[in-house]
Image (cartoon, rainbow, N blue to C red; front, top):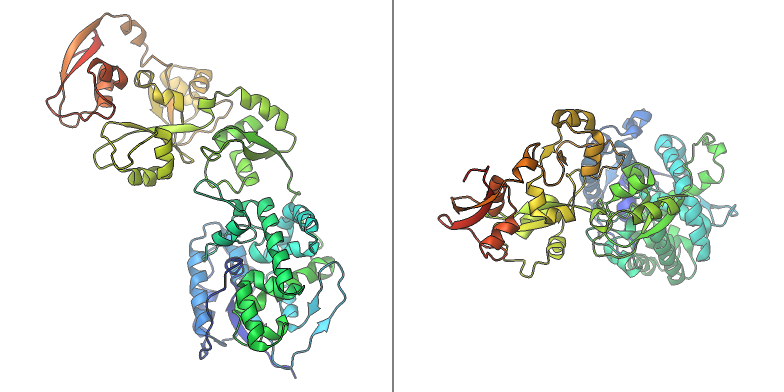
Length: 569
C-alpha cells in the first residue's frame, strides 16, 4: 500500500515565481513538529476576510505532522506578506497561492500517463490528484475566481504563446503564478502576473522605474514569460516539466538536482528535500489546474462568469499626462484607466518619457485624440508649489510628496541638489489625492497671490462652495479645470475667485495709484509672506530690490515695495 505523509507546506508560488533565481538553499535538517506551523497557518497566517477558512471548515482538521525548519521560515515569510495585504480578495489569492497542505509520494508511487487532450502533456499521480481535489473542493471559491479572472487575459496570452510556438495551455501557468492578478507582489519582490524579479525582467526587456514597471503589464510580461519558457525548454532538451520547474526554481537549481539524482526526470528529482517544497508542488499544481480546465463541468465549474477579454485602444501621449485627465476625456472612472494600465505605478505617465503608449477604452481613440489636442500642454499634468524652508532637503521633500528626488531636480532645473535656498519655490508633481494646479499658474506668483482659494472639507460640493463664495458652479469648473467632474477630495484646494481678484473689491483697489514703501524684514519672513501681505508677487519684489534667485532674507533687511495706496505699510 502506498504511504503518504501529510505535510503543511508553504507554496511560495507568487514569490517562488521569481524566474531566473534559485530559491533559498535547502539543507537536510531534522524534521520538527509542525504543530506550531499548523496553528499559525490556521489562525494568524490568514488575513481577516479570507474566504478559504470560512468556506472550508475542514481546513481546521488537518493533522499535526512534521516539517523542516525551512518550511517554518517560509510560513513566517507568508505571514508577513499576508499582514501587509489590505484587500481581502488579494489576500485570499495569496493564501491559496502560498499556503497549502500537500501530499508527498513515497517510493512506491505509480504514475498514470494520459494522452494529452489539448497541447500540453498531462500526468496524473497522487500529487496531481491531491491538488485536483483541493481546487475543486475546499479551495473552490478562490479557484473559481481565478478561472473567471482568466477570461480577461487568457485569449491574449494564448495568442502570444502561439507566436512563440509554445503550448497554448502553458499560458495557464500565470494562474499558478499569481491567480492572473497584475497586482501580485511577493516577499521576494517578484511582481505582476508572471512574477518576474527585477533582474530577470531586465534580461527579457521589461523596463521600470519609480513611475512604471513593465512586469505589471500583462501583455509585455507575457511576451517575456514566453521567451523565458522557450529558452528553458531548450536548455532542458525539450522536457516541459523540467522547464516549468526551472521557471520556479531557476535553471541552476534544477541542473543541480539532475546531477544529484543522475536522471533528467522531474518526478524523480522532486523526491526528498533537494528541491524546495514550492518547486516540488509547482508542476503538480499546473497539471491539476489544466486537468480541471479541460473539463470544467465535470469538476463542478459550469456556472462561471468569465471576465470580458481585455480590449483597448492605444494612444501615444507626447508628454507627462495626468490619468485623471485621461479618464475625464474618455468619460470613464479613474480606476478604469488604472486597470487598463497596471504598469503605471503613479498618477500620471512618466515625466520625460515622450510618446508613452497609453491604453484607453476600446472605441474611444479618435474622440480622445481630438479632446486631448485641445488641452494646453501645461494643464496635462498638475503640480504643487512648495516654498523651501529651513531644514528642507530634496530627500525630505521627496518623502513628503512621495516623488523621486530626480523628478524634483528635473522639473526645477536644479544644478546643485545639495544647495537648496530658503525662500525658493519648487514645483513638485502631485500624488493621487493632492490638490492640483496647472504648472503655468504656479509659475505666475502675481496671479497666484491675488487669487482667493478654499480648501475642500468632507461633505463639500461645488454647489455649497459656490453658494458660500457667491460664485457659480460653472465658474468653479472653469477656474479649477474640473471639466464635468463633480468629484472633490477633502484637502483639495480650489480657486474661488478669478485670476487677479482676491475679493470683490480687489478690482477697485487695483485702480488705486501705486506708492513706494519700505519694509523691514522680521524674523521668519519670506518673500512669499511679504508678497501675500501686500498683494504683490515675489518676482516683483525681487525685481524692485535686485535680488537674485534664492536670496536669503535676514532680519533687519529693508525692502522697497510698490503697493496700492489703499493698503497699509
